[in-house]
Image 1 (cartoon, rainbow, N blue to C red):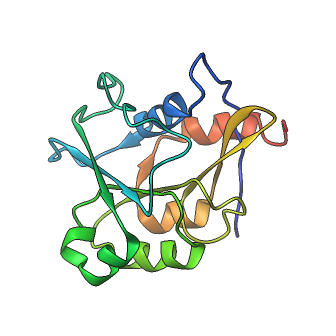
Image 2 (image 1 turned 60 degrees about the vertical axis):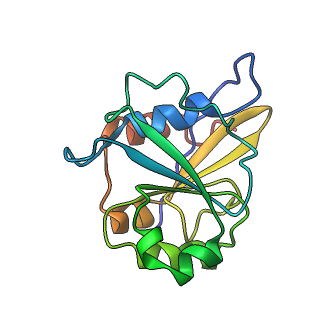
Length: 166
């Protein structure tokens, strides 16, 4: 069964969702062997987050070293080795079906976030959107479970608190 949760995030002086994404990532328990996370932006320049999202590094995300890489989905679909270097796939202009194809290629646990998946029914585990001048997100519990990424239940409890707050 698919569950969708929403959490309103109030915009700060900057008009981006950097704090929202940083907050989500801080609730993920990453493999202890990771010394760096590869945050892969897929199919374009992010519209919701800034290029400086991890500068300075967050003291809440471990490991704190996060490397941003840019790829086209076609490049990752044709080269599984490159695709499997990513711990976080951040989809910008990627169809739900292509998101799912890339997710199915993963040979390790990956967190998937999308800017253009408002239904959040297939594809990404976390779907960002903007409503009433606020950044919000939905969690696709089926995709999160399939990814085997361990996200602290606090983020799910917080999202439940704000469910339907639009």
